[in-house]
Image 1 (cartoon, rainbow, N blue to C red):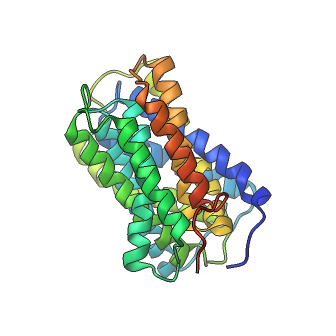
Image 2 (cartoon, rainbow, N blue to C red):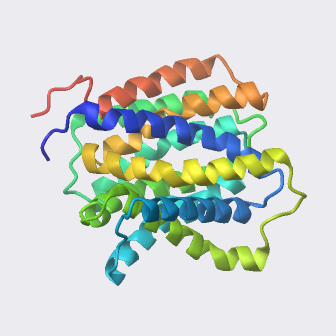
Length: 299
């Protein structure tokens, strides 16, 4: 694949990291009134509605073949529906800080999936080393060696299940979706809309709320849907197309920083000194995966 100038994808990459990092706070706010299915369904519904209006206003053509919609539905399941539910239910058991930090295991999952099933998207030694260092950083950040304290192993497993779905979705999207002749906003609108359609039966059966609405839950789900699940996926498709699936997946190395800052500031969640060391490991690993630093000469 020809090299793409960093200036083309880096602004969208940073914007996506900040937006998705803030999403863990908005999930917590949404959960004040909504159940886990409600959070996942409404973020897809609001996001899809926002993107469809945007596509209509810009006269953007949507996919018109069943095969194309099928591939986008698979991505919607892996990148929206299942993780959207797992992150929401996971945050009923762990803090938003922990959720944001565990989200950074996505590149590790992506490398595992690419190695097993998408071998045309090659991983070099520096990128593999970067993922290992990143995983070590996450171990430090989560305090997994000393116990989870207020956080539940059940929540951790649910969140790791979500990042595994992410790890499958990035290379799948690159192989089957990003080759389609549509703009990123067209692909994002179709994908997010599919996620709402997939979750609609579960929302109808289980309901979406368990408590009265309040201002935080309303604002949380509106921002999470329109921005974090809407426009964010335009940036995501563009990042995968320009930088590759592995580099695009390292956006989750920005999200823990944002999630931690917001969780500590607005939710008064705890933060330990060892997490600083872990965070530095994560940032260094991101530089390796993005090929900004080379420690090993590839043969």
